[in-house]
Structures are given as C-alpha cells and as structure tokens.
Amino acid sequence: MSRSTPLLAVTCAAVLLAGCGTSKEDKAKAQVCDARADIQKQIDGLKGQTAATATVDGVKNSLQTIQDDLKKMANAQGDLSADRKKQVEAANQAFSSDMKAIAGDVTSLSATDVRARVTTAVQSLATGYQQAFSNVHCG
Image 1 (spheres, rainbow, N blue to C red):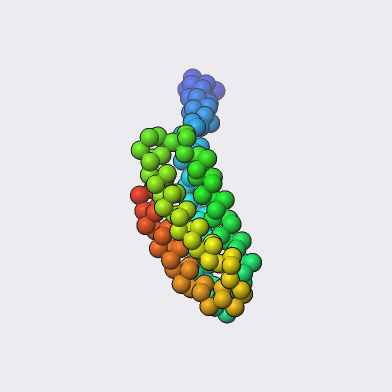
Image 2 (image 1 turned 45 degrees about the horizontal axis):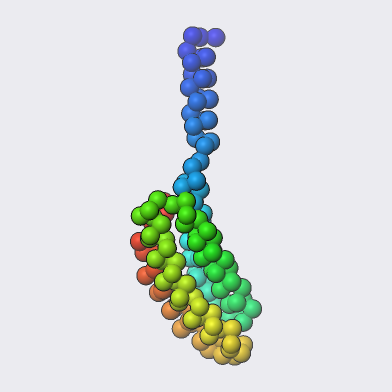
C-alpha cells in the first residue's frame, strides 16, 4: 500500500461526510423545487386533456395534488433565506388565488360542463402558474 492511500481514504471520507449534512435551507429549497415540478407536471397533464377526455374526478384529483404541493411550499418557507422566502411566498399567494377560483368553478360543474370548460380553465391555470413562479428558480 502506498503512502498516499491512507491520506486519500481520509480525504474521501471527509468529503462524503461533508456532503451528507444537508441544511434546513437546502431541504426547504428541495421541497419547494419538488413541489414546483409536481405542479408543472399536474398542469401539463391537465393541458393534455381535451373536452372528450377530461373527467370531473381526474381534474379534481389534479387540482387537489396542486393544492397539496402549495401547502408543502408554504410549510417549507420558514427555512428559506429571506429573499427566497419572499419569492416563494408571493408566488404561492398569487397562484393560490388562481387555484381557488378555478377549483371553485370546476367542483361546482357537471361532467359535461367540465369537459366544455377544461381547456379554458387549464390555460388560465397554466398562465397563472407561469406568472406566479417565474421568479422562483430551481436548478
């Protein structure tokens, strides 16, 4: 065994241990980014539906998932840096308002009405999402 092998092993171990400790802020950022990505996934799924394929339950489930993701973001805000917290908070509030309006419309409609309005509602939701979260960067 060469002289550098023990030193290399100690260095590798130190790097691994340093990488294992994730701060609360890093965890909160990851939680926000994961929720943001899931919201985009739900919106993309809704955009893929047409008047012929949309179902009331399918739309309601996607909207519920989005609401759950917004709650995850809100729960993570306390561990974010001040600037990041402001960005996420503002985006969450703006998008939550859009969500409540659209969810209220969808939950009170019949299956036929949902199919007829899904394209308009989803486009509005997608636009609201883009506007609200344009300043919240992940990656």
